[in-house]
Image 1: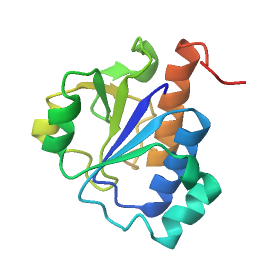
Image 2: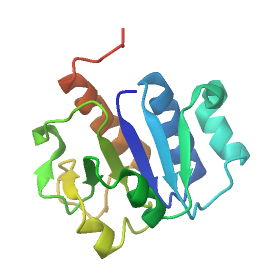
Image 3: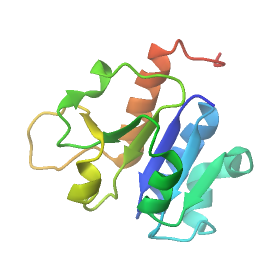
Image 4: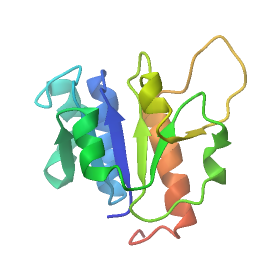
Length: 153
């Protein structure tokens, strides 16, 4: 496994499906932290992930606390518009965790403060941020590029 992609309370099934597909194609594990804004069985999630779900390494956590109890000793980065470091300035390592907050509001302040924040630079505009699945792909592929695209053709 190359990376761990973590979605904190994801709300939009299509984003989760797209990220799941990216995880399968990059040999990354997907972690979902409840509550989820949809059921994993929802058509939209499955449609976005196409037929990749059978190949997805997926772990569902009942809460953020459960996730931290299991993985709190690992390197966990938080992708956020408030991150102080550009994503390409992080020296990623195999097995790192990259967390993304819920689409509408990110993560609570106490979660935000526990992790190193990274961001994808954007021009200042009236929009809040890039689409979640696009951001996850951008950051994941930079991390994989730094690692020499392990096990990838």
